[in-house]
Image 1 (cartoon, rainbow, N blue to C red):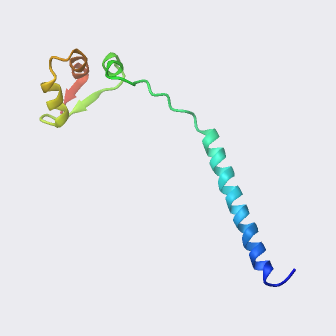
Image 2 (image 1 turned 120 degrees about the vertical axis):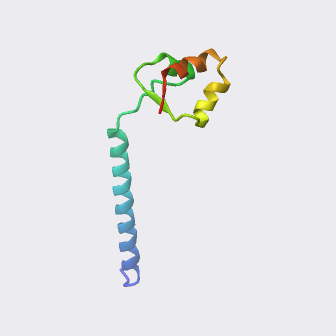
Image 3 (image 1 turned 60 degrees about the vertical axis):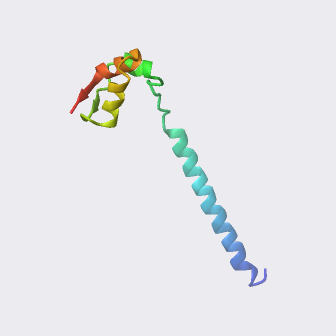
Length: 85
């Protein structure tokens, strides 16, 4: 093998080794992590649950949202779970 080709072949093998290691590591990590199941998808789900305690600051944009939409039944149900700090 010519002397010029040796560094190129070495660089090729080093690159292939690094790419294989990164791929194997990412594959192992993605298979090891459990999928997160989100229990809340809509406002109705948020209003129906009792596990998550919702908080908001007085006079915040969230509190203003609940005050403006006070006639909306779903938003009122969510607002019942809120505590103001």
